[in-house]
Length: 169
Image (tube, rainbow, N blue to C red; front, side, top):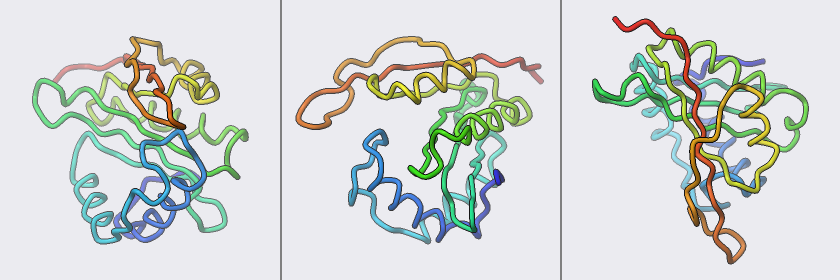
């Protein structure tokens, strides 16, 4: 099931991020780097709920969070129409179409939140995610060379963007 995150999801989300960090090497945090902070999660979720241009969707299966997609819109008049996208799935939820469903849910909701530009970064060797983003309409806009340090080597990040229809107020 895909649904919007609520403040009540703070503990489950905190647990999920710990699991995700141990399972993947494609996210920013390495295993053990992200401190467990349920109250901090609660505060971030409350702030997100109060914001017009920030949303988080959760993929839940058997009452556990298995994935997330978040859009974080800019906080100033000049950039509030633009949102950063971050998403991740646990291993058991990958290669089943859930990532595409999560991302398409986010994309469909963005204009109603005042967003007409979505942007994200993907590690250059993460071919599955890069393919998913392209499939959902994102285009490559550039490369951040040596953006990450992984396995004793530098890794590039591909910057991608998607423009959406939007009527300015």
